[in-house]
Image (cartoon, rainbow, N blue to C red; front, side):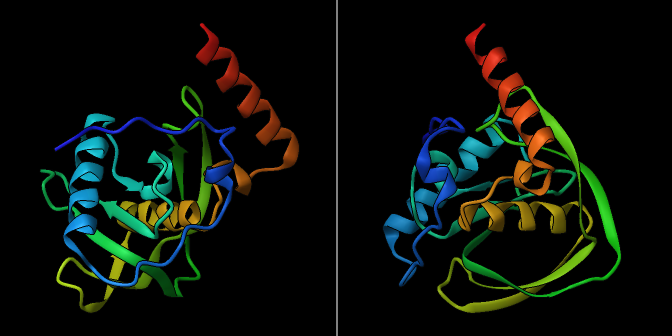
Length: 166
């Protein structure tokens, strides 16, 4: 398929909620394929459609050791989140060159439309859970830096902009 370019952090679309997906169509399947190719090229463990300029609630996640196990999700929503938190160093190709340690629930139960167009509920734990939550943030118009203090966020955005100008 195709590796797509990432929107820069300043693009307003990254800061807006994405539109729900009405049905799983051939177009949606092709977008998911491109998203997986793009995620693998990063390399990364997840990608949300708004990151590449597609304002639909589509995400892919693959935190498997051997890869090739991508979960394709449309309209994902968290039903339950564990009380226990897990810290992980998060980054985004939309804000290149920087990262931050973010604490999120260690496990989540998520409902979504799967590749067959069926409603599925699945439990995700560890890095899978972190990535799913990170992608849902993107679908809601948030980035991982929105979990930081305003000063820390401003510093990371400025550092990324400086690195991008080089």
